[in-house]
Image 1 (cartoon, rainbow, N blue to C red):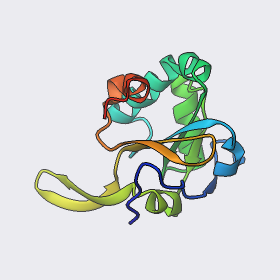
Image 2 (image 1 turned 90 degrees about the horizontal axis):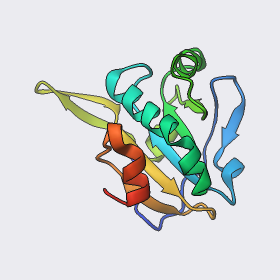
Image 3 (image 1 turned 30 degrees about the vertical axis):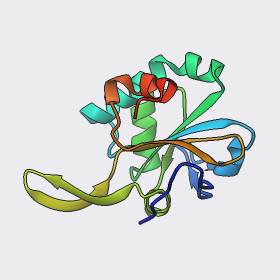
Image 4 (image 1 turned 180 degrees about the vertical axis):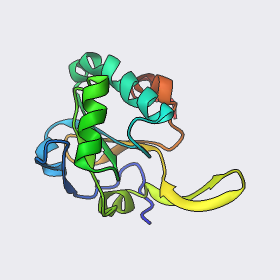
Length: 153
């Protein structure tokens, strides 16, 4: 598992989105990117986070941010999630967990005293030059845009 820090070069990635289109970090060169990792499509916390970003999408675009979500769900699941909640940004299918591992978003979790491996909800803000500017490991799913813009970690 990677331990990335602010100031590090963001790991390169490539995966397919909900429509099977390849998307890579390089596609966002020259743009600020909010790359967010979430556990599962259409679950309460993940839906709250996606809808908060959706509801503030125009504001984020005006501030120069692009948004990409990543989970281990497949393209079909992502497509249903996007259609159900009218999400305006792509969701990447990281079924082999390569991106999750590269960004340290896969690791030990604890639920009701049981430890297991899973997706760690994490967001990275990546600069136009591919440098990590912000990392949110304690994501406020209902107010995530405010965290990103207000720099509340």
